[in-house]
Figure 1 (cartoon, rainbow, N blue to C red):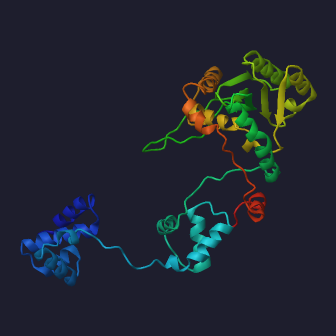
Figure 2: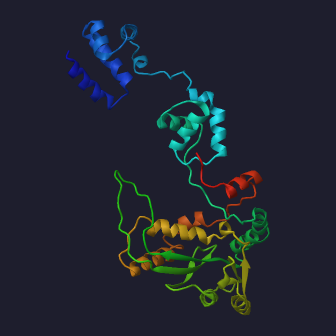
Length: 353
């Protein structure tokens, strides 16, 4: 049989099974046609002991064994330096396989491909994970105290139907390109709008119903915007005490807003400073970006605003299932992280190779 034809057959079969199995199959076929072992060894680049072993399997009918590859018992040399490598990963900020590859060569002297390093890392349960953010001035203990003594009891009261609890915040959507991911075989390109038009949305998210009341404009959010939102909540009230959890933005914490809220019977509960993780409406803004802005093109500012408004208006309808998962009693707290880890998060700068 011509070598070129054997190579074509091997390429065809390799698309279905691994090359080792391909060679075994071709070997036993050629043996069945009484081709000389030395010719098989030459054409398939197999050792004569291997051919003899496959012939014995064929004669004894051990087909399953022929088609099974036993695991390679040889341990990777990377495993010999496992503790060193993983300790370095925990201590540093390695952003890609190229940096890890350089670190491994420097620490161990081993030169390994990025593919091999990737296999090693996955075997040890490492994978690329998007980092989260915590404000450098946040006080984790104060956040937990606020959550356990104020926020959680308010959530329980709202669920029991004793109060109306809203999470309040403003998001400033700047029309332009929002990076996103889509499933595709090739990289796609999305148009970006010209200009820097900004759409401001001041929202109050009902913790129980997931309905959002908004005040919007394309200028600035001011104290009068907050007062207008309070008026809207009072007008749509159902006879239960209204309580708002909100951050410490100056236009919300000013005396004008506090006095007005007090005059209409609305209680303002201000979060600890630098605590966006406790303000559940922050999750809504991320959802809006993911749902209608990321990797999307809006030709005009009006189309841009309409897409945002529609998404926000559907939080208690079309998107209620997603909101029930996003807006819950579960919050991210940071006081369980050790002081050493916090120091690493707060103080580390860009990775230095």
